[in-house]
Length: 274
Image 1 (cartoon, rainbow, N blue to C red):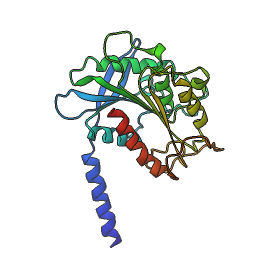
Image 2 (spheres, helix red, strand yellow):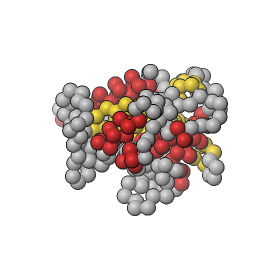
Image 3 (cartoon, rainbow, N blue to C red):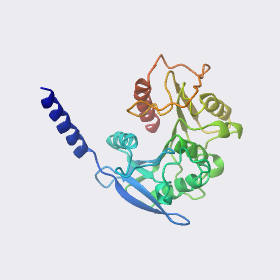
Image 4 (cartoon, one colour):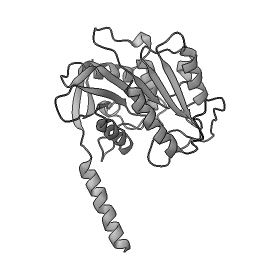
């Protein structure tokens, strides 16, 4: 019986792997060099709403996967909702591996990664299958921190093409932005766990609340009981020493990363559909 169940599990896993769409490699010109990216696109001519998705400090892929499973899961979810999804590879394009434990990062969120966002957006504006007025930004961790820099009014595009429709930042490091008086020129949603012990929920709340009245719409959702990387399908890794945002607005007693992950999927869908 156990062997039969194992065989069934393997068969289902292989079927799921075959059903998963493969991304298309894309090369985007930079001022110096080329930015490699992975594109998930619905079938047909479009035009499609499109999401520029920014990976975290662990990078976009690995030796065996062009796109890591946690990012592939998001790409497939967005694809099913009718979106194209483009993942620029900020580290692999510069022949760098994961940067999470690198003391001196050569690819900075506020500099190279913002330039990558601008180049990706410029490339998308030239594609006939893109709904140019429905291009949004999503980012995770270091990618979310880059997003916060990319949507500041000072980083606005100077051409006549439409700006980003929306932005969604998963657990960014808000401490620098909060101290600089951050604001955004596009509707921006920040999603973070109350027990995030890597990023700072209080700093993110301070950053968003400080932008009210002098910014485009900015909103924060703090998920009670959730940690950093709460949207991953497996158990998240926690840093030593937790942080608790006792003053954050409650959204019911979620209690687990799995529940926060489900809530975040709804929040993302609603924000992109605005």
